[in-house]
Length: 252
Ligand code: ADP
Ligand code: MG
Image (cartoon, rainbow, N blue to C red; front, top):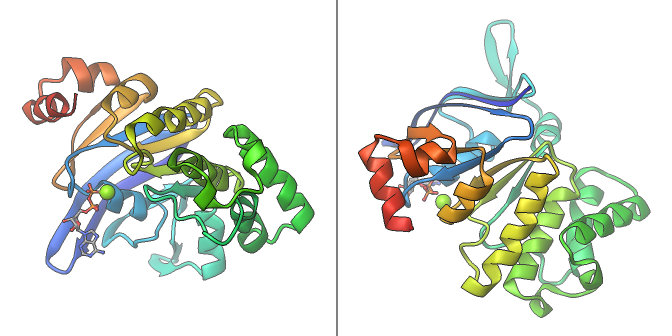
């Protein structure tokens, strides 16, 4: 089943065209990696998927529904903020720099989405949040403040916060790039666990071994275009694309 369809997405900032026509479909349960040089448009594409940025042209469909806009007759009109937040909640984002509230405990950070966005009553939200923390192996850190957690633990709280929204898809933007090398594996192990559970994931990453081992398909973005795409055996092996070969070689 196609969960996400990206159709001819363009994004410009003034005269700078960052995305130059992206077409991609993602099946439910698929793990898709985005790789590419800094500035190639990976983060912009993630932000266009969940409509944190509106594409300049083209559209994104989640379960067949256009994200952020809808068709009225033959015109596209913006969705109401309630409709948009309903759609966004299905596409949780995990950021490079965690973005946790420093004055809230791990549990309170994870509860925030269910309580504020989903308007779930506190006790139910608490149960959801505790389950999400358990899933990332942090049940015993529920009452800890971020400053008392390692970077790897903070990022696992970030993942729990995404899980608590019960999204259809999780978008990861370089989830391990801000971590000391010895903390990377615990976060990758949690993401691998979600993949094993059948979640649909899009992961922007510079961890080529992880992309090779976990992703079903890897997208190589080059200057705002999909320059190459395929299973890891293609991107890290059989591809005839010289740009892909060069990029992958430099990162291994
Ligand atoms: P990546 O994540 O692959 O490193 P980005 O999507 O962050 O790439 O950025 C792609 C290009 O778009 C860069 O040249 C960046 O400077 C530019 N860019 C990104 N966001 C904005 C913005 N809000 N305003 C202007 N330019 C931007
Ligand atoms: Mg980026």
